[in-house]
Image (cartoon, rainbow, N blue to C red; front, side):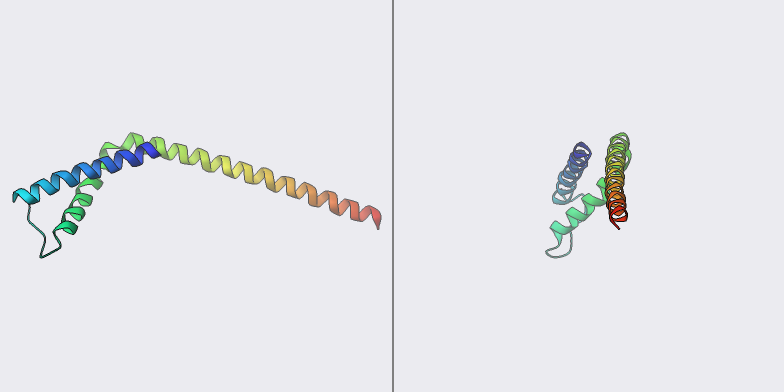
Length: 100
């Protein structure tokens, strides 16, 4: 998961550098007034999203498998804890039934 995040961040930074170079060289248009920095960031996000969607497909699949495994493990732990609590409640109710 961390690897996917770092790879996606790397693509974003690469696009940011390329867009910055294109804007300051005059090839790409500048933003209005003082919005040039925001223009560069937004354009970089817009360009990096489809690139990372295509390029990082395998890494995204690996990350999703890891997430599914973690969720399944947490669910099984919760189920085990619930059954332990149910067993304790059953023992207490039996003990109270025997003393009455």
